[in-house]
Length: 377
Image (cartoon, rainbow, N blue to C red; front, top):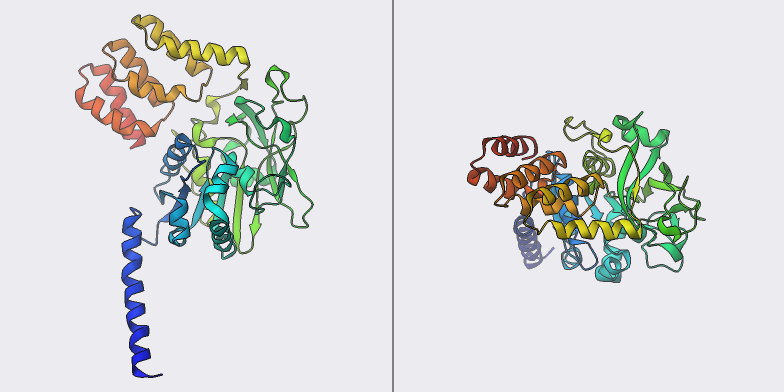
């Protein structure tokens, strides 16, 4: 090769090697190869809260480094610095639109090369192969009863089959419930490549008889399969939003990245927290809103009672209200907020808790806040 050509190749190699660390730094990452690096999509269509809660759930695992990634970063090749990608809750079609055709091809090539991908709720819609619905056709699942896709929300029960218990053995002999918000009802498509069913719906989801009875029970709730050299995991529910079950997210991440399925501390693994399905009817949604408005009242007893009931209803947004209530002028309200944040392991509140710990004068509240920091920091 001519000397000038050799020189050009050498310069290109040096520039590439220098650019990679800069890109990693721009993503807020470091190049520690021992860490499992997981990207969570945060473009248009990805629910803001879903992104935050998914990243927080991944941080349960000290061997995982979790960061958000945008569609432009994917197009720029920055997904290649990660071991797996999570498509979170929100809108599957809007996320797909934001990723774009070029981005979809990059993601497919990324998975085929041996990387992993996880779809949670909207992400499971997006990664499936349903005809007539915008998707990536990575998993061979299809979702049924599209006419009633917004079938409801609440806490729903599912069961694991033998293959599922191999990945989540801690859940054996427990009633299993997760937050659910219009997730897909999945069945096997016509492809010769079949997915592995890991768990099935138990709850018949048809509040107010909007959706037909009998659609969800026995249908696939979670699944995994291969795609090229890579691995795929889909979940219809929201483990990232379910106290005691958030550790399912890093466990899935370890599975799709071919890493050891390590155990987690008992304060994370608490399936016993929930034992009854709760579906939000129109009347319950109205009641939930009424309870929310009570949080702005001047009667501390009414505020605390509303906080308690919202928690008992497993109102998904209510856990976030406790961050603001931690700044109440009433000591009893602050005490209830601290207890609920601890019980719900809401780690997204860590900065709120740290500041409250500095400012708080009540010793009982300080003790609870300190326990939160020690458990969940």
